[in-house]
Length: 463
Image (cartoon, rainbow, N blue to C red; front, side, top):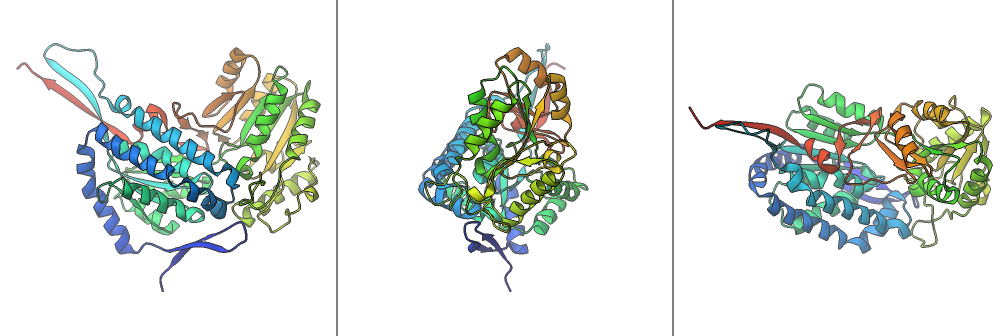
């Protein structure tokens, strides 16, 4: 019997998509074709590869009318926000295409008489991308376009929850006329993916997902010499200082906490607020949170869709219940959100106060629509609390003082520091993290360095 992989829709629990899992022959053929195609693909000029990659981007954008409802069915994002992911996809892809010449240009040390010295950036070879479901186009494009631009071939394994995204990307590549073997989407089990990594036929694996998934990828790669890029969990903090623009901070932190039902690696999961403006912040935050409309993501009026899975929604509910039993106060009455119920993927947004770092909701990744809010007395206390975490993806500081934000940002253990914004990736900056958030970097010119390797030339002209 053919093994199948299935996407269970969070809208109604039905099987939305199912596809046959790749066979051993499928995998062998894909790896072989990718290895053969890589030499010809890397021999193309950067400008030639850019034409292909630009066509891929255009082809994905042309599918917007179909992609938006597909995302709602597959992972629950309301259709009113569906196009936003494609705007981000386009921004990152076009930027990485634009900077490829600069990022991949040879570097030359100080000239020496009679000797030509330079360092080329050459492709690593074959890149295996394992992409998650929460931002299925955005996370995939971080590695996909720069890997291709750098001259690598790519094999993609997308999450079972977003099976259709891998197919859309394959269709976009096929329509762009990519040579056979340059890109291949495969439907794989976790065990098959691990076996591919351990087989020593891959040159670089880029994984985005959970900490446990990252450990599994690292374990599979342990006896190889491939490169491993890991973007894992987050517990991203925000600090609202006394001098912050309060309305701006409230509006953006509510969105940062609840957009995508909180299912964002760089979403806001804990907020520290100056005691001098604490109550005003809480009042504004709760008023805006109560305005969310929890409902079917296919409805244009819905602003908060279901979580991708009922099991993950119940995990977040358990975090909340545990915190409340330990003294936290929940400020949102879930009865005001009709669809919220235990065992359902539909979950109301929640804000907790009277929380502390003994509670799992302030220490462990929630990945759902809940945020803990603590009152703080000064910068030193806040930095200590922000750093009291196993994660370090991004952190935001809300203040009118840029110099202060830069100083505090230097003290915070994180990959990205934001001032007066959050939950955003600037493609000109490296997307990276510290601690259990992973290792490596994507985007920016630095992102190209993980997808290439240096090759040095020392050419002596005189004998």
